[in-house]
Length: 441
Ligand code: ADP
Ligand code: ASP
Ligand code: MG
Image 1 (cartoon, protein in one colour):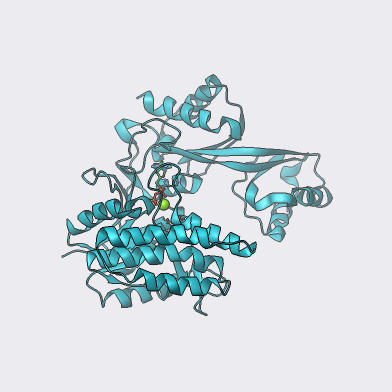
Image 2 (cartoon, rainbow, N blue to C red):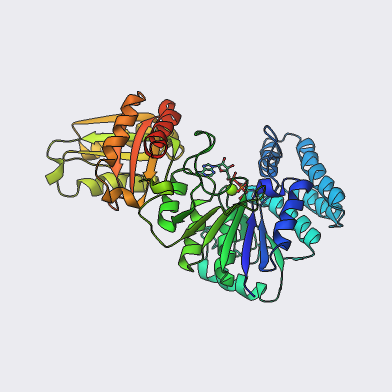
């Protein structure tokens, strides 16, 4: 008998109807022994995710505003599940406990984590699986950094005692026992950590799309599904914005060489996407690229200085400025006497004037140009390196679509080409690239 770890995202546990689909999937294969769940997500367009409502509760508490109404909505959604599924989870008692904690002004992470906690309690009761809390298993240090080895050991030791279990995704705890969440979408990471710790045969990630698609389906109509892709290519696409799998969920699976299979809870017969170490040159249907993804809201600072290339230590001094501000850098495309720094706007916020002042004083550049409201788009595919004319195809398509390219960066692996365009051109550019490489073959 094998072991599969199955993670079900928010839409797969959004209500009793979805949980019933989830149960059927789990029961169809006895190897699906360990299940990780998200908090209930949206049931329809315009609905709220439970996690968003929990964050809203915290915001209300922080503003000394009443939060009872929002909390009641969360309560009612879970109670409706308990009733519709005909299980007795003891939710009323669990909610009383959470309500009592809310009066003591608990941390944002604690409040946000309750969606996954309650979701796992409901799904475990419905399946007749053991409920195993993630708080004592997903371990962070006091600064909030994941302790990988300790986490793997704790999960392995605990799950060896359970034939079948449901675990809440998204959170763990610090040494003092306080709850710490991952960033949004982090239940994917929990699933990967559990899969790695138990040495699963496969990590199944059940969501609302039939696998990883070659582009965001909210931008490109009916994009093709990717049948197979390597961990490295997928990480590029997730990191750049393909939100279907959290970018940090790849490493634990990759390290343990566990294939990831992205599947659709609403179309369980579809094979979805299989992610392994194996690299293939061609994408779907012989396509040169595997996929295109991106996100908005970056800021590019372009620095020009004559003879920069021979000025020893210039780049080090430039980078140390960002280190001092604690700002991570996304990309550093460079030319002979120019270098551009690409940063996420959320990390810069109102510190830009100070940063520019430091630039002037410490680097004495000939000029600095700042482009705000930029989007980055990565076109990814192992096969691009071997084919001439890839850039020409891309740039022609973008030119014909009227998109102005502000920045180009080709990673040294030649597995991706990253371009910077204005936020307003983001969707047009994605469609143009997809059309040029995918529709054309
Ligand atoms: P879950 O709640 O199951 O974790 P998410 O909402 O996090 O699901 O991720 C699935 C969503 O990701 C899809 O509904 C889709 O809108 C979006 N998405 C963005 N880019 C892609 C892509 N390249 N392939 C598939 N889905 C994508
Ligand atoms: N519920 C959390 C979120 O909405 C984590 C997750 O769904 O993976 O971000
Ligand atoms: Mg997700």
